[in-house]
Length: 108
Image (cartoon, rainbow, N blue to C red):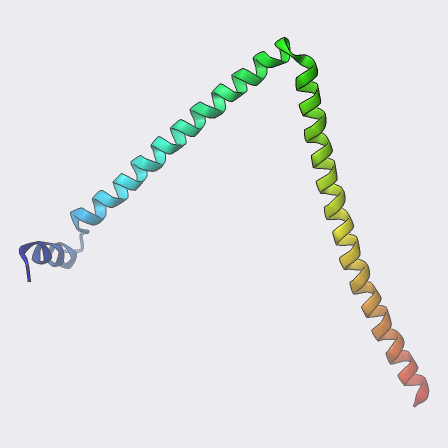
């Protein structure tokens, strides 16, 4: 076995973790923090642009707000319609099952 393998096994035997595993975790953490910081910066700049845009072009902003609200209400209506169809289908099959049981009971 190589010297690196012995170091890894030796550190694991002592209850520790290898430097390679520890470095990977820290590297991933730093990478995630850098990604989060850049995403936060982009979001902040977009919010500043949106805030300034309301003074420059209020009609365009209102148009986008209306469009967004229309999309939200359409999505809600679709989800309510889908759930009503599912529940009515379930209720219909349950009532049909009960009707069959009642009719079967009358025949006896």
